[in-house]
Amino acid sequence: MANKVSPSFFVADSILFVGYSKRHAAYCKSVREAFEKRGTTVYPVNPGAGPYDVKVFASVQEVPAVPVLAVVITNKSRNMELLEALAAKGVKRVMFGSKISADASTLERCTALGMESAVVCPLQALGTGFHRFHGWLAGVPRV
Image (cartoon, rainbow, N blue to C red; front, top):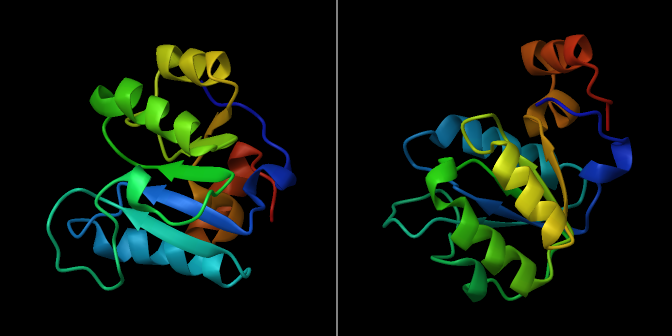
């Protein structure tokens, strides 16, 4: 299911980060900070109650901006409803953090809704150290 993505896939003025989790706080913070270091505004989304280290929106609809890119690290069981919300918001590209977040039907639905999609950990392109090394092995471009 891995697919090649161009460096431009990761570039956006703002992103939706769906699945920003307190359970995986260190990872989520690393992804958020990697985008922010590149000047990207990050809008974390999670319907669960906090506490979080930043403001987190309860739904995609609550986000005040229209980001072209969404990073999704949720369980794929919620994807069909989520993809409809992302498309309605105006999202053009969706990055699923792993195969846990996407399967073939998810990627097909993205295409049907007019959204580009990729299954890739954002830290493989934006991160450093082990994440970037793993990205290099996987052929993920450095952004």
